[in-house]
Length: 211
Image 1 (cartoon, rainbow, N blue to C red):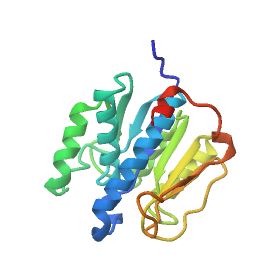
Image 2 (cartoon, rainbow, N blue to C red):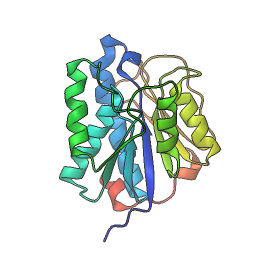
Image 3 (cartoon, helix red, strand yellow):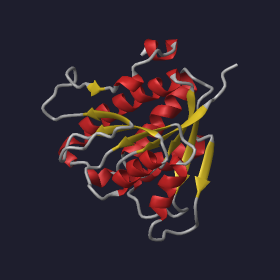
Image 4 (cartoon, one colour):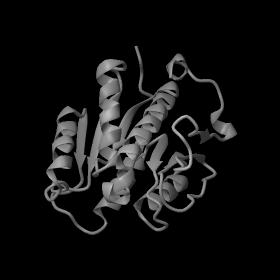
């Protein structure tokens, strides 16, 4: 029997951070690397994934997890963390439909409060990271933004981090506790690569090798 040993958190970036001209390519590349990191986590016996479910890459990440759960790895779980019940009230329909579709299929939904208030998204991120074994974060290139705060909080909690740099924006600093994956606009699909620290180069299960 497969036993879930720990929890892997995923915090992503919102759609308004992505340039419209690169949105489709963002989705293709981010989904590809999210999938690869999920395989990496599964190879380390991390089978419960926490996702924040904001517009954009959060929803793409959740869709990748659901597809893997429903086709190849029925033991994995998707837990959605919402800062408030009204999160999607004013979203465009193009995002509301997949949002509620993901919620309907999630293994668990955790909602912090009924209505939005200042700081509720930051508290949501902390709830996701607390007790996690690994944080997979898609950086939004905002130096003092929510993703930077989340990665710093993970560092303080001793949580391993995988930071995925999107196609646009300034350099994202690497963290000692994890890896940095860069999706550069100058790189072709076949050239995009990741840099792994030595601490993550140990053996993996057949799940990772299948990737």
